[in-house]
Length: 340
Image (cartoon, rainbow, N blue to C red):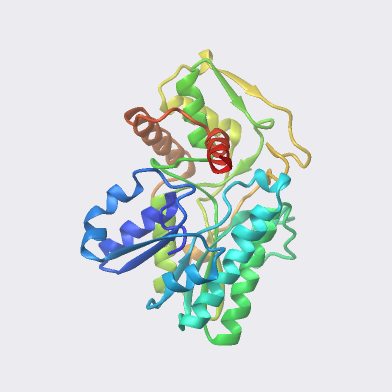
């Protein structure tokens, strides 16, 4: 599993190990929590879990990690989506080159099944809302979105040429108690530092689906069992409907037991295109009817997922001995450390 030490990856690793699977994780630990492996000490010790430190941009590393396996779960990608505006190579290398290396590593090792983490942003600004998997043409509106769609195309080409089975998942915004980045995490951090003023990127009208990570993992594993054996199939994975960023802020304030009358919502100027930053997709509304037709339903709706995530993030960060950092602050710190 590429990116298996990350937020979604670690949740999926735990589920697979519980089901008796043997798992290898390839991750450069750039977005992992320092104690990510503490959850897997027993499995690392008895050989059920193997960890390879490295990135998907190195083909040899990918080949070593995928050897001997029958399925690859490809989660690794550039996660600094706003950073792709200033440095487009982040998405080229982290998403496109990385996915090509995963596909080539699979080909050389004879692996013929892959589960790929795509994104709901590949639709761009669709004319049909909510948007199902048959909608087109797709017109991505950022380097990240374009790179995710390119990854789908790369894997589709390999699948049809070499007789593979590819399942591509267009995720909604995935959240949970162990989220260490994203809007819910950042709102919790900001409110813990200052409980009377919350800065919000954009005008707060950006609307997206929010899904609990456990429900998302349920959906991925359910599709793997139930989907037809076709070369390439795409599934949206999301709760029904959307939440605006403003509503997410209100839910987080409520979850942290703050009085909303005492919290000023301070909106920044809207970026061109209507998002919170250049390249942000202001509206993502996914129709997950195809997945539901296979018998999957999320246990939490979007609002409940936000509340659960906010409470869990609060408890986790307060119990840790690390500084309260937003996603952007954490990335800046990592970049400064790498430059030394």
